[in-house]
Image (cartoon, rainbow, N blue to C red; front, side):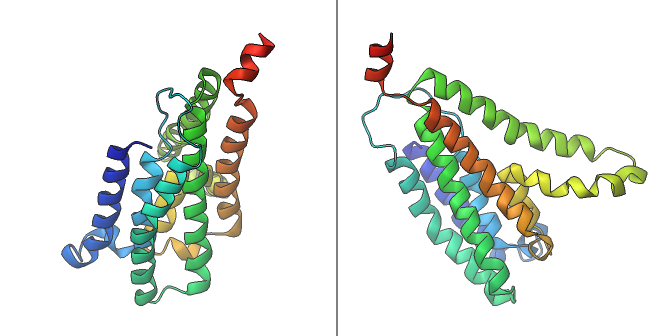
Length: 210
C-alpha cells in the first residue's frame, strides 16, 4: 500500500469519528463509529496494484496499514462503548474487522509480485467487492413480495467486507450481526490470501521450471 493511499485512508478514518462532534444529526453518525473508521481502510487497502519487484518484505505493507488503522479504530470503538454498545458484541466484531483488513492488505501486497497472482487477485477482488455490491443493489429492486424468500441470503453479503462493514456500521446494525457473517467475512479474506500465496512463486523457481 503506497504512502498516498496510507495517508488518505488514515485521514478519512480519523475524520469519521469526528463526525460525532461536528455532524450529530448526520445519519451515518448514529451507527457504529468503529465500522465507519475501518471502512476507508477496507476500501483502499485491498485495491489491486501494479506489479512491483520483490524489494521489500511482504509483511511490511500489511503491517503498516494495520498499525495506522488502529488509532481511529480504537477511537471509534471507544465512542461506541460510551454510547452503550455491549463490549461482548463490539469487541469480536472490531477485532474481526481488523483481521479482515490485515488479510486483504496482505493478499494485495503479495499479489503484486507476479502477473499470475495479480490476475487471480484482481478476479477475486472484482467478484467479492464490486461484484457482490452490484448484486446487492440489483436485488434491492426485487419486489417486496420476494423479500422474505431472499432474507436468508443476507449473511452471504458478508463475503464483501465493504457490505459487511456497512451493515454493522448503520444504526442498530451491530446488534443484528450473527456469528455466520463474522466467519464469512474472515473466511473470504483468508481464502483470497491463501489463493494468492499458493499461486505466488519466487522468480528463481519460475526460471528453473522454465
